Image 1 (cartoon, helix red, strand yellow):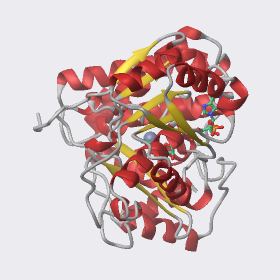
Image 2: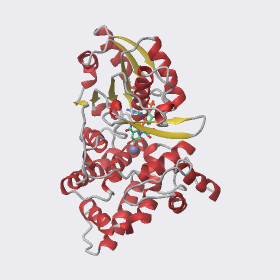
Image 3: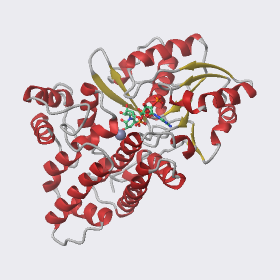
Image 4: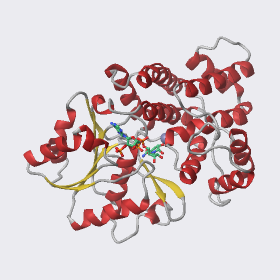
Length: 392
Ligand code: NZQ
Ligand code: ZN
């Protein structure tokens, strides 16, 4: 086992009607003046926003609303949120929505606590943040795991760069998780969520280490998400499936499913460049490249992919290479079966790209030739280009 520190401090409040506990939770963590961050309207339409405002009013917690966070949230919008947080003297930031909203809330919390430093300086690692306002989450989509993760991802519209910042300051104090709040999701977003949840575990599972307990937890999570994901995409009103996905989404990205290993996360890095350039949904960006990545790297250690195939997909094949390839095929077929694209061509936001664009994607993915990605197999610009090309 590789050495690790495990710290997952977010209090989880799970179940029906738990959103009614919002004010009580804010008080518990010392909040009095709240900035309530939300997205492009889904919580207005569902009535959740009214409900949250009512619980805050009833508990005499003052609040300001900050809506408009877009999927693949922008730095520019988060900066506006920082200004508002400072203006209204917010001492607590709530993100009510999905990863995009919660990440915006996290960015505002760091920006407001470190003003006047511009938040992008933290996201580009020029500076390290040492403070953040406390953040709470009310989750409406099971996907990014931001409700308990240490990460927040922003896109700088001006430069087309998408970057994540990992810091313990990003862990929300609490996450309110009512699966009923996810039942208004369109099937495509459910499928994007299923893919992202799987990928947070798979981007940890495929790494140089093998750890029996951690691997078994990861495999159980993947089997659960595949089985429940199939049902959820057909029927987002299925409480059982939406519940399992919601809990899996948090466990998949709070660190648990990779303990004792090393994060790989190459597929996430490949996907981020696609989202930055084409504004495609995060989950879809991952499905777009996973198959090409897997075929490019499985020979590094076929036994690892064979274990995945046998324990996640129940493949009985005894030859490791054949089992590995069957597992990759099954995974790609699953993504397609839930409506996810398995290539650039199949991705409705992208389509087939010319060679110049594929090279540019690879160049950007290496942060302009300043890094490699991955740990299962370390990938440089040429390998990254070949993966995009195979996914074209
Ligand atoms: O903006 P609204 O109107 O809320 O609509 C959203 C959005 O259009 C909609 N939606 C959310 N809940 C809904 C709903 N529609 C109907 N009913 C509901 N209950 O769904 C769309 C997608 O929402 P978004 O928040 O973008 O989804 P997701 O949770 O997948 O977040 C994606 C973002 O998180 C980042 C991604 O890169 C992307 O920017 N990630 C964040 C991570 C983290 N902080 O730890 C890790 C991930 O790997 C990921 O990178
Ligand atoms: Zn992700």
